[in-house]
Image 1 (tube, rainbow, N blue to C red):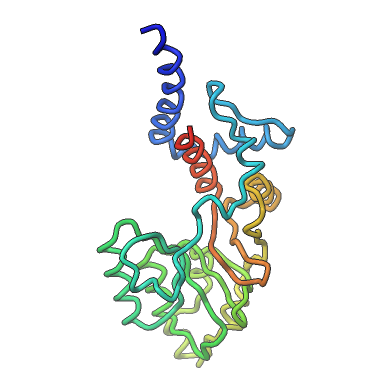
Image 2 (image 1 turned 30 degrees about the horizontal axis):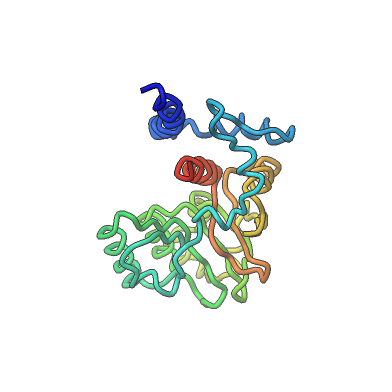
Length: 239
């Protein structure tokens, strides 16, 4: 029995850490603050001598945290997996996406792409997309390249009403939508480490950032809760 004690002792910490994380996942922001203090001074966050979060964050590219999205072209046909972006389309497209999400609990769509190749946008449809799919972010895409982002509540709050559009004969095109207040060009590269992305979030006072490749194409949006949970999970699984 004595021979098993060291092994059991090693297994207790990861199991306990996982249980605590599942119970207190909403308090991940507090863990983030502690981690950032340690990372800023070049140290690492240790839990029971088992988890060294700082070291993991400093060596793990953000692209290795399984945050990539399913390609947008196959979202409607994908039977499983996670997708976090969808190009704006018509009501028929929205209906198909609703069914896709309802029939597949593992699928998440939280980003609306606004491309510049549509001459006129429907206010009703934009609002319907965001509210029905519960989208969190709006990504502007100009010429196929990332052109800024905005949180969906800010985006919706600045849209004119359908009545205003009719009465004032407004043309809701890409330029007008892109002119919303609060649009940010802040972004990260997939080659950046988790630590670097967390530091950028702290510098820019945000908890989310779009990830854009070297050619300027949008890939996905990450937030600090995702990053920390993925780091902790990968460390627990690897032990």
